Length: 353
Ligand code: SF4
Image (cartoon, rainbow, N blue to C red; front, side, top):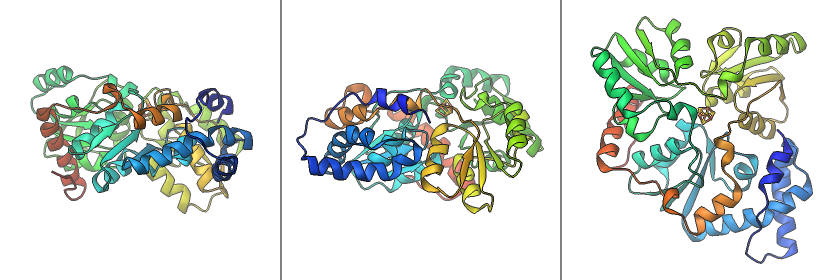
């Protein structure tokens, strides 16, 4: 991952007075993980006062910091209490004992946290969106319902709360097929990810009706990239996210969710892996499984990478209105039903009331 990208981000210094000894100790802690993704000791010294201030404040203010795997490694290894994909993070939201959840991720995920645990204060350091979530509105869903009155409506978790409120069931990349199969209808409107819908169609007898949303990160991978990795690293296992193009999916060794990819890599005896997904996951695997070699290219999500340590600190200190997730009660109630339907099909009820 490109180091310059991060260094440009670290322009803010902490206001707290830490001793040189404390800074060196924190820099050492950071360097232990961040060196595996190309950070130098001086880089870690530069961000150490910030991570110390954030970690101190989150304890004082009873805040848990959750970070998606695609967030930058300074946040992941510097201040996050839990790292995961949307499904893993949702479970943590339910279990959280702290008064406030600070969600380092894109906006729809923080909204989902609020839907799942409405009594908590949910903060987001930067109101970053997502090309999938932006591709569809509640009005679009209402129109589609009129056009396909017999169809069951499933929305991928990468949708706004208002869109979730208009659907029958939600799904994640890990349980999408299970939810499609678990619906009573023979026709399924699968929203909004066109490529995921295409990838699911050969796996089910149900008719899947697609929308036109795409993840701008995962659609970047091409079959040519897969072919060149196969040629240069014949022993490597190639893993792709379900948001990739079908022409990529048909060439790889495994397709699934972020968590599914982690589990595959962990259990596989192979030594080399290409991960056709966002660079954050490649970075996590380099840090957490240093014995495995991550090869080939990855792609950066411009939305996830918007969040910086200085934003986390600012949101902790004095959150602005746009950093506090507020949702209309009616939207929360309806979106809870949609998420509950997913949970009912996939596993047990997990929401807090
Ligand atoms: S990686 Fe794709 S789906 Fe995930 S937040 Fe970025 S644009 Fe959205």
